[in-house]
Image (cartoon, rainbow, N blue to C red):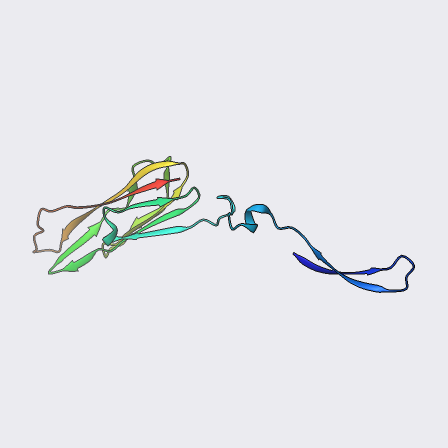
Amino acid sequence: MVGMKWSAAPWGMALALVTVTAAAAPAAAHGQASDRARPAQRIVLANADTGRSVTARLGDDVEVRLTGHREHGLTYTWSTPASSNSTVLRRTAGGTSPSGDASAVFHAEHRGTATITAVRRCRPAPGHLCPLVVLPWKATVEVQ
Protein backbone atom coordinates (compact mmCIF):
# COMPACT_ATOMS: atom_id res chain seq x y z
CA MET A 1 0.00 0.00 0.00
CA VAL A 2 1.39 3.43 -0.90
CA GLY A 3 0.39 6.56 1.03
CA MET A 4 1.52 10.12 1.31
CA LYS A 5 2.60 11.81 4.51
CA TRP A 6 3.76 15.36 5.14
CA SER A 7 6.77 15.74 7.40
CA ALA A 8 8.05 18.95 8.94
CA ALA A 9 11.69 19.70 9.68
CA PRO A 10 12.49 19.73 13.41
CA TRP A 11 12.52 23.53 13.58
CA GLY A 12 9.28 23.87 11.53
CA MET A 13 10.77 25.82 8.61
CA ALA A 14 10.38 23.41 5.67
CA LEU A 15 7.87 20.77 4.66
CA ALA A 16 8.81 17.64 2.72
CA LEU A 17 6.65 15.08 0.97
CA VAL A 18 7.50 11.56 2.15
CA THR A 19 6.19 8.40 0.43
CA VAL A 20 5.23 5.61 2.79
CA THR A 21 5.11 2.04 1.46
CA ALA A 22 3.62 -0.83 3.45
CA ALA A 23 4.70 -4.38 2.69
CA ALA A 24 2.00 -6.68 1.32
CA ALA A 25 1.33 -10.03 2.95
CA PRO A 26 3.78 -12.60 1.56
CA ALA A 27 1.16 -14.97 0.11
CA ALA A 28 -0.80 -12.21 -1.59
CA ALA A 29 2.36 -10.57 -2.90
CA HIS A 30 3.26 -13.72 -4.78
CA GLY A 31 -0.28 -14.60 -5.92
CA GLN A 32 -0.42 -17.62 -3.60
CA ALA A 33 -3.68 -17.16 -1.72
CA SER A 34 -4.38 -19.92 0.76
CA ASP A 35 -7.22 -22.39 0.14
CA ARG A 36 -9.23 -20.69 2.87
CA ALA A 37 -8.93 -17.32 1.12
CA ARG A 38 -10.02 -18.74 -2.25
CA PRO A 39 -13.73 -18.25 -2.84
CA ALA A 40 -15.77 -21.43 -3.23
CA GLN A 41 -16.30 -22.54 -6.81
CA ARG A 42 -19.35 -24.15 -8.44
CA ILE A 43 -18.70 -27.02 -10.83
CA VAL A 44 -21.67 -27.70 -13.12
CA LEU A 45 -22.20 -31.12 -14.72
CA ALA A 46 -24.83 -32.04 -17.33
CA ASN A 47 -26.01 -35.04 -19.40
CA ALA A 48 -22.88 -35.03 -21.59
CA ASP A 49 -20.58 -35.24 -18.54
CA THR A 50 -21.38 -38.88 -17.76
CA GLY A 51 -18.18 -40.80 -17.05
CA ARG A 52 -16.28 -37.59 -16.28
CA SER A 53 -13.91 -37.18 -13.33
CA VAL A 54 -13.54 -33.76 -11.73
CA THR A 55 -11.54 -32.29 -8.90
CA ALA A 56 -13.12 -30.03 -6.29
CA ARG A 57 -11.69 -28.32 -3.25
CA LEU A 58 -13.12 -28.21 0.24
CA GLY A 59 -16.05 -25.80 0.28
CA ASP A 60 -16.82 -26.06 -3.44
CA ASP A 61 -20.26 -26.99 -4.75
CA VAL A 62 -20.91 -29.50 -7.51
CA GLU A 63 -24.19 -28.93 -9.34
CA VAL A 64 -25.71 -31.62 -11.55
CA ARG A 65 -28.34 -30.63 -14.15
CA LEU A 66 -29.79 -33.54 -16.10
CA THR A 67 -32.32 -32.90 -18.84
CA GLY A 68 -35.07 -35.39 -19.62
CA HIS A 69 -36.92 -35.46 -22.92
CA ARG A 70 -40.16 -36.55 -24.53
CA GLU A 71 -40.69 -38.22 -27.87
CA HIS A 72 -43.44 -40.32 -29.46
CA GLY A 73 -45.51 -40.62 -26.28
CA LEU A 74 -42.54 -41.51 -24.10
CA THR A 75 -40.96 -39.37 -21.39
CA TYR A 76 -37.40 -40.14 -20.37
CA THR A 77 -37.00 -39.05 -16.74
CA TRP A 78 -33.94 -38.82 -14.49
CA SER A 79 -33.76 -39.83 -10.84
CA THR A 80 -32.47 -37.27 -8.36
CA PRO A 81 -28.64 -37.44 -8.41
CA ALA A 82 -27.13 -39.09 -5.32
CA SER A 83 -23.66 -39.20 -3.76
CA SER A 84 -21.93 -42.48 -2.98
CA ASN A 85 -20.26 -40.86 0.05
CA SER A 86 -22.22 -38.14 1.84
CA THR A 87 -19.30 -37.52 4.20
CA VAL A 88 -17.22 -36.30 1.24
CA LEU A 89 -20.03 -34.82 -0.93
CA ARG A 90 -23.18 -33.86 0.97
CA ARG A 91 -26.30 -33.19 -1.11
CA THR A 92 -27.74 -29.80 -0.10
CA ALA A 93 -30.53 -29.62 -2.70
CA GLY A 94 -32.11 -31.89 -5.24
CA GLY A 95 -35.25 -32.88 -7.04
CA THR A 96 -37.00 -33.78 -10.27
CA SER A 97 -39.54 -32.09 -12.54
CA PRO A 98 -42.55 -33.48 -14.44
CA SER A 99 -40.66 -32.93 -17.71
CA GLY A 100 -38.05 -35.51 -16.65
CA ASP A 101 -35.32 -33.11 -15.58
CA ALA A 102 -33.38 -33.69 -12.36
CA SER A 103 -30.91 -31.56 -10.47
CA ALA A 104 -28.88 -31.61 -7.29
CA VAL A 105 -26.21 -29.58 -5.53
CA PHE A 106 -23.47 -31.26 -3.51
CA HIS A 107 -21.13 -29.53 -1.06
CA ALA A 108 -17.53 -30.72 -0.73
CA GLU A 109 -17.31 -31.40 3.02
CA HIS A 110 -14.20 -33.59 3.44
CA ARG A 111 -11.24 -34.78 1.41
CA GLY A 112 -11.83 -38.02 -0.49
CA THR A 113 -13.61 -39.41 -3.52
CA ALA A 114 -17.33 -39.80 -4.18
CA THR A 115 -19.36 -40.86 -7.19
CA ILE A 116 -22.51 -39.01 -8.17
CA THR A 117 -25.06 -41.22 -9.90
CA ALA A 118 -28.51 -40.95 -11.46
CA VAL A 119 -30.62 -43.17 -13.68
CA ARG A 120 -32.78 -42.31 -16.70
CA ARG A 121 -35.93 -44.36 -17.19
CA CYS A 122 -38.79 -44.33 -19.65
CA ARG A 123 -42.32 -43.35 -18.60
CA PRO A 124 -44.93 -44.19 -21.24
CA ALA A 125 -48.05 -42.16 -21.97
CA PRO A 126 -51.27 -44.21 -22.09
CA GLY A 127 -51.25 -46.54 -25.11
CA HIS A 128 -47.45 -46.50 -25.50
CA LEU A 129 -44.77 -48.98 -24.51
CA CYS A 130 -41.27 -48.20 -23.26
CA PRO A 131 -38.13 -50.03 -24.26
CA LEU A 132 -36.70 -51.95 -21.31
CA VAL A 133 -33.61 -49.79 -21.14
CA VAL A 134 -32.22 -47.94 -18.13
CA LEU A 135 -29.48 -45.40 -18.80
CA PRO A 136 -27.06 -44.80 -15.91
CA TRP A 137 -25.24 -41.47 -15.42
CA LYS A 138 -22.22 -41.03 -13.17
CA ALA A 139 -19.38 -38.65 -12.43
CA THR A 140 -16.48 -39.11 -10.02
CA VAL A 141 -15.50 -36.19 -7.80
CA GLU A 142 -12.20 -36.05 -5.94
CA VAL A 143 -12.23 -33.50 -3.14
CA GLN A 144 -8.80 -32.10 -2.24
